[in-house]
Amino acid sequence: MAFIIGVSGTTGAGKSTLVKELAFRLDNAACLAFDAYKETTVYPADMMEQLAKGGTMDLHKIESPEFLQDLLTLKSGRSVVDPCGRKIASTEFVVVEEPFGRQRSETASVLDLVAFIETPLDIALARRIVRDIQEEYTDVPASEALVMVEEFLQSYLGGMRAAYHTISCSASEGADVVLDGLRPVEELAQEVLNRIDA
Image 1 (spheres, one colour):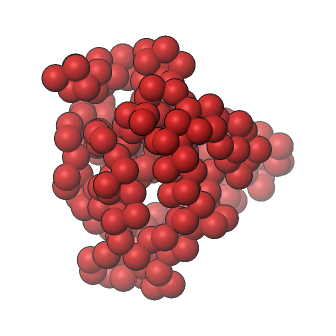
Image 2: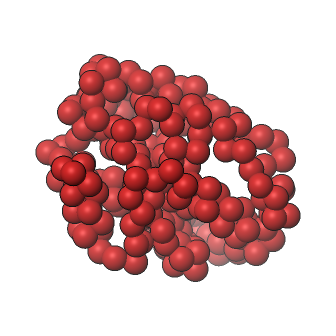
């Protein structure tokens, strides 16, 4: 059985960067990203609206059956092909980007260790915008990219910030280790590895 490491945190917290660093340090461990399954993940219809109003959210209602199935397959030592067409071979360790940590009943019992990256929301927002500019907006005209950034910032100010805060607070619960997202990724990875050794 593979040892499953979950990396949780809000958008822009640094999850993908830490997943890659851990995979490298664990001798090319397998990686699985929750975001790759966005087309088959089902969220409650009013989730963001409720969170934006300061309400709570039962993260157990977020369902991603294909993600769960591939995670279980990797845990059992078999390979999978994710929705992006990448073949992922199971190894001794599988590092999983699971934003909600153990707060989703679907994956809670599958994760052997959960690391939560605690990053101030302003830093996470800046990282998200930089990432989008570098990765998402490269093939669109600058004026169109500017409109897309503005729309994202408007939604952030219109309630997304409150939603991210609520989700982060919930995801940090039940984490085995809470990491300071302002520290270098090398230090964060070493802290997770120390916890695995312990």
